[in-house]
Length: 444
Image (cartoon, rainbow, N blue to C red; front, side, top):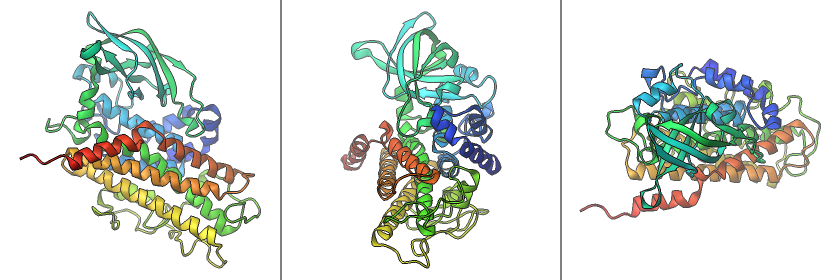
């Protein structure tokens, strides 16, 4: 992905964020900017014109897009990429059909839990059923659906690639957060799908290690799945923290311990606001991570190390000095509640950033084992838990939302909370998988 096109996508997404919120889906201009920025082709095989990109780059760039543009656009961009990776599990003939017109096919999906039925017929399967929460389905060319093939003990889940025109879309998405993702329901009524456009869901879950494939095409689903879901929450929480700190440090609005003041001079959600108040807390911004993900954060999360061309640690998106706890309200007394909120929330956001950055590095570089997959899954859940805690605290200390910045802050908090509630980021299954990987007796 090119930095200039990512920057353009952020500007477009920020400009259309309010529209996405109202219409509960991305507009065509934003979708095209995501495609132009390279999200759809990120994991597509090079044979079909794709980039076969890394997990770390996608996580970092999705977080940047959420921070500087719109979390809903970042979510859809990350899933455009993720679904291209999933489509690479199709047989060769199926992949040729999906990417017949180039690597930028827009792919939506509804895979968990499997729903509907796929009944065997001559030459393939007949698919029927209803699936929920297919993000971005309104602008999709193809939809990947997981359905049950067979009955009883012989039943197994199969992923089917279906042209979007063969499906019905039901306008069902009306969530308090992430409203602009257009995560509507999909309806299939006796749709014929040839076997070469299907594969077993178990193959995606297990991955194809040792098959001589690019890493992104052989990795099991949980190695980086949670990280890609969590990245937009990181960007949204970072932006929420910047807004809260900006309001507190300037005395504008009604953020913090009862402080009041005049409206800010820069409207939240505009490109100016996206770049002007994006100085980062702690060790650096998500923009720095976008340039130097592979070199950041040691195994224990003790620091960051940039790469050539990356902003130095401690600088903001535009290269300005980072806003630290000690400088956020320089020149004024700090109420105890304000200091506590800033310290705790900034620490939680930074801890989440380090967890996700390091997990993404491992996903790209370390040998794939059951323990690594479980560890990455655990860290994605822990990261979004920290982010959700941080934004709830910020929301609890925000006064009446009478202007656009207050409204944006509370919307970002709802977005992060909604991401944290996603099934792929639930603590219980992640904890069980991690405990099983760590506590299983070693082979003799």
